[in-house]
Amino acid sequence: MAVEEDKKSSRNRTITLTEEEKEKYSKLLHVMEGPAALEEIENKTTNQDLFEVLDWLPRNCVDLLFLDPPYNLDKEFNRTVFKQRSTEAYLKWLETWFPKLLPTLKPNASVYFCGEWRSSTAIHLLLEKYLKVRNRITWEREKGRGALTNWKNCSEDIWFCTVGDEYTFNADAVKLKRRVIAPYRTESGRPKDWLETSEGNFRLTHPSNLWTDLTVPFWSMPENTDHPTQKPEKLLAKLILASTNPGDLVLDPFLGSGTTSVVAKKLGRRYIGIELDAYYCCLAEKRLALAEEDSSIQGYQDGVFWERNTLSMQRASQRGRRRKSAYAQRLRELGLDD
Image (cartoon, rainbow, N blue to C red; front, side):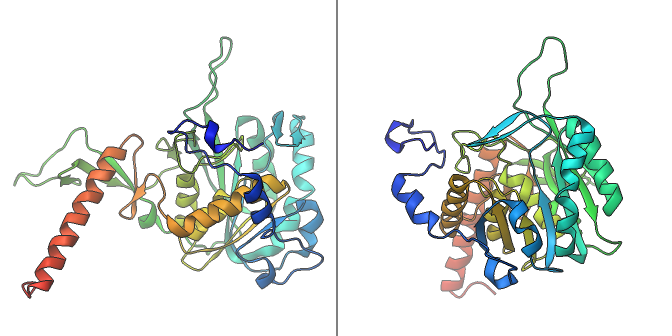
């Protein structure tokens, strides 16, 4: 499954595993043998079938539940194959595991449930039965095959729900920095609701339920793995920052290659990850180790999310901050900072 490092292009930054790394990281994986206390599985990757451990998870401890199960499509996940079924059959499958996760949630917890157009009907029916449905986020997946007899499929959904009417939502933590096309000014000449910077003119906008600023991980991105449905770290960062506070606990029972756990760690949250496939679990552990050295999230900088294709502007902003920091340090050294 792994791609040998010496066969990759120098620009290919896809995270892979050597045989030595598989052995190393497999020793870090957790296996439940019965009902688990929170401290046994917190900040760990559990390598087990979700159906085996559903009844063993600790109760009333999760602040954010992120769900990215197989969509209602034919899809192969390493050695596991999921087959498309009718909407009714897919809903029945969701009912076999989703209700058993609810006892893990705190009364003020939030739930985000991923899907696409074919899966969303069943997901909506399921969520209305058990939770308070707040919104449906639609995000643009710029990848996708063209079609001659249908519209190109390049969007996915994320259903936002809460257990009750009291819940965390930090709108200021997930503002989007957009370039200003028409920079209106006040009569005095000041920018009207936008910022004038050396990198360009920008406006901070409140988060909406339509996201067009995400990039699906690909081979030249340092977060990329060979998982077929890997979500962008930026996507998880938005959900985690909006619906948790530092130190809160995030649960992902379909962890895949570890994006949820990695982003939770980078943002100072605790995490529980459960994944059936051992190879993907080892990828998650390698990414968690890499996060010790680099906690950056592509597209998130200065406490705001940037539009897609603004990496050069982000780097310019970062250089500007470094220059200002160095200048301020020099003033302090000379005793001129008063």
